[in-house]
Length: 321
Image (cartoon, rainbow, N blue to C red):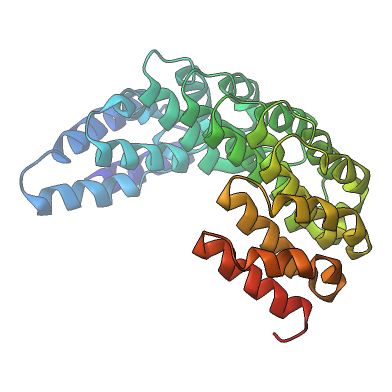
């Protein structure tokens, strides 16, 4: 029924016939299909899903009904509606942008997801998405960061917005920002200075994730070496381990800077720190011979995971692996 209806809309458009009535009919048909999604009969629900999946840009008249349905209690219906709105594309952007300011978090979240799936077609929603980076819901802030990159990766406001997200109070948002920034880095964006600066952030988690991101970027992050050297003095031992790993992966010649730090961390009160220090020394390999006595001592550690890490490091340093 809906397919015939949409075909009729296309014919009317081709003939220059006013479509306002058909748009209203679209909305009524969509309301019926959304109600059908709640039917106890699975075949009825499947039929409604198939018909809704066929909606595209020509179903702009159904947008108000679909946006209203983003507040549905049924998760499956919300997911279907979000997908349909993303397929409608640009005609749905104004309503979804308005929904970014909705009273309920679920509506705001689904609006962000729908816009994200549209990609560049949702460019007009960028101001609203930048504001969504300040939403009180942490999930919305995470999704908004991802949406900005999918919609306008080359935009001048993307990097500043993601840089701000690195300071978010929520760990998940910070990790999302790191992930997105790394992706941009692989595409040629200048993200190394952002991560280098983040090594001095007041939040431990930000410093950890920044060091890990630089480690994964490898040689591409050589511009961060001075900041990483400074990071070896970080007050947090786990951060020092992460910084040490990043430093030797980016510039192996800096091993002489990190070995004393790692040897000291082998005596840390935290077993995870001791194990991490041993692991990084193993990653350095033969260049970490100066740490052999400390690693031999670490093989007597009271924690099995530390003893194992120390043994593996010694084998790598001695070239037995």
